Image 1: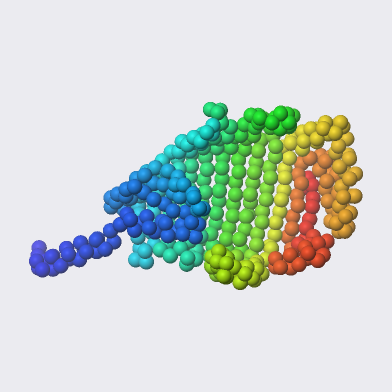
Image 2: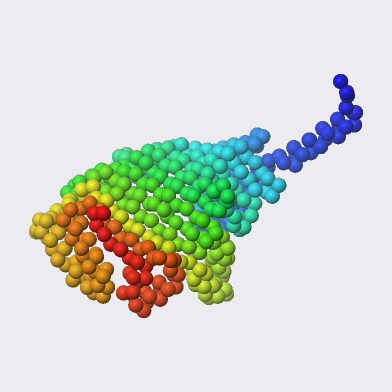
Length: 392
């Protein structure tokens, strides 16, 4: 077996030692990087002690101070960062971040939260430089059960929450998701007698459901979209919403942030306002839709509202059907007026679904919409191709 020269062995050992030292994590520098990423928001993070063990960092006595004059620090506790790496540019990536469970009481209200964690965290060396990675500060955020109690009685709970941010493989954009499952709210404890009576007659003593959001951001044209925002509650209904605009590029975001900073300075505030208005001209409306699918709340609402007026729910529905065309006539948009009146009538006769959409054939610049709103508001429905339908 061939032996290596002693000087080569020593040189290699020295190089490896220096290399390991050069890339060793520094807890204080890591905390400084976290605070730098929060500079634009004004939030400050502090820790009483920081321990580094290889690629893991433990911060003891963590607290954060929200923005605002006179804001007081909020205690978090001990936070563990595992799989921390720093690249040659000073960017940090963290495999997992785990937070302590929360139990906080203020006066008669107690809030608890468990299972709080982040994974795939990215902390940029320079947060002012907008890249696709800065649009996804984490790959996933999770929580276990969250509760809110009033005077010892639980009034709200959520079984779990998960949020994700996924950079596309070709780095052309980011896809986001957020969902809260097992939502439960006790509305029967209202101290106001009228509110309590309304809750009981509407059958809303306990509200149960889920909320889910799917959104995306395509960088080439700056298309930002809420692809689906769904609120689904038992014995109430499902509300679906979507919205998209174009022109929200990384360059525009950088310019908006720069203009926002100048607006804080009285000497440059007026110029910044003009610049901000100019930047808004780059945005265009792509489309939007709101759809409600009834799960029995409409009939109960008509019955309750009718009772307040001394009529039945059916009589109130007939009255609304008759009033709709008269009220819509003031808009001076005959085509839309007829569509809305027809949809309202169909929905009140048989409540299943009601949809309002705006989907122009091509994106419409926001300045055009603003101009129409001030000069000829009756042209907006045609400009945005507004459609109204029921039970489809």
